[in-house]
Image (cartoon, rainbow, N blue to C red; front, side, top):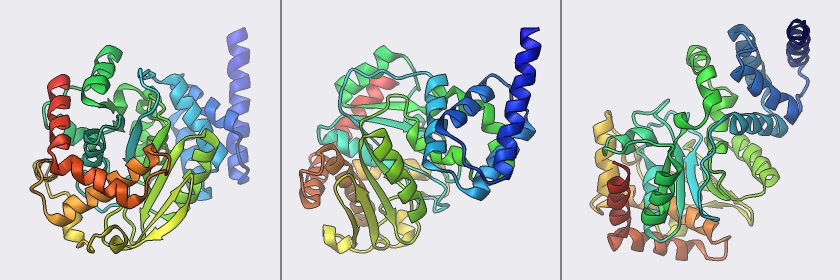
Length: 345
């Protein structure tokens, strides 16, 4: 009888939530966390999840709603407990439909090559040819959630890769719905926030300034060191194809590529190619220091702002560009990647 009663109570609760959504009311952090817990316990039929996601997308998600979804995903997922206090994740929201090469992932190895610790969280491509997991897997890497292996990789190579599907258990419940909806949902915004190791530093690329404002408030509430970047022409990373905006704990500023000593890149120089193999070739070319100048510069720019976040803003961006450049020019970025592949294959 308890089960019947709790099921009836649950139906009332779900009806209330959906009615409030229809009335454009905001949900609390606790309520959205409970929605995730309910989804993972198969309490919500697909039609209700679809209605909820559509309603949120039409209204726009609030900071507390996003944090509640994050709480739920981290609570129902597999934690990645790393024996290191300070490390960074470099990640984009994706969905800018620009099909760029693997800029964030390449930047991570440049940052690690410069001696900083990195815990990269990623997945297979959703809207581009090659996501972080595609390019990593295409080098023979085996994904793992084994904490000993993860910590050994971080310790010996300075970088660890966390394949999202092994950690965020809630995501598989909503996967088919997200695919069927064919428009971005709140779950697109959650990817960068649910790194299972919960890094204290993050460089995030966003596709527009509305997202920048949203994440800026989210990071302030989480209390981490962060940089958020957006290229004014719509890339969710520093593409050097236009001016770009950067927001951190310390400043908010629009930069021109020339401010960092770089020329303007052409859109075709940022593209990731038509196949996973072409994307892999560009990734390799940057680390091997034989890429197009624009490709190298784009990675240097993104890596530099990541380094500045790690340094708590105490180094100028020019200094950080030079640290990133030395990582590639000295071969340390490539050596770091080779060591990572050796440990994780």
